[in-house]
Length: 224
Ligand SMILES: [Zn+2]
Ligand SMILES: [Zn+2]
Image (cartoon, rainbow, N blue to C red; front, side, top):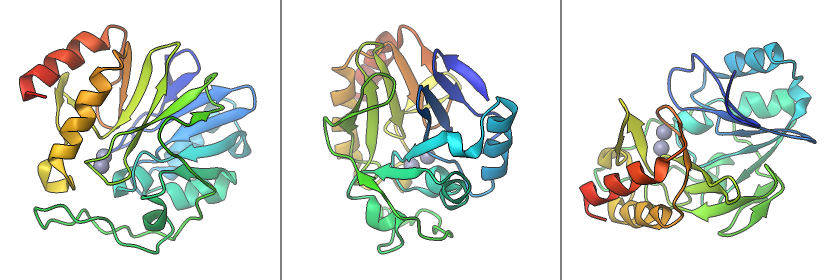
């Protein structure tokens, strides 16, 4: 794994869906888990960085798409970590409800995984004991219970799939895989008001420093 900014790391060579590790005195927090074959890569990169699986205390889930929760069962089992997510994503992760279907009729690839118990549900404005205080920001649209994570002192936003960053260009998530594009646009508008300095995407390289200008230009380009 590779350091992105102090206390924040990301994993290398995952095929799809970026995973972050946040380091605190009590251990590590993972944000998302990539696709189903990523668990061994994540565990071995943790080990190479000197961590034991049990150092992972919790796994935050931005939303329950297969490229974000694919390796969740294996990682949760290997680490014993608690899984935290929004109440609307919990029944999907626990295998009690199918993924919300986008209006395109295209269903995201089926979740072929063992249900995982969710230990804690996260609501708007909750402050989590991570990175000195990590605020839950509700950013629905791409998925009903999509959430982002905001560290106000560092002006750092983990944005999940509310915004993609491909080839150094921000884009909206694919409409075919998004439950409500208008709602996602409102979520994009909402995060511009935070004026983030760093943006950590679910897809694409993180932007560290001066992210707000790019985010504002993107918001103008898409008219939100
Ligand atoms: Zn997604
Ligand atoms: Zn994704």
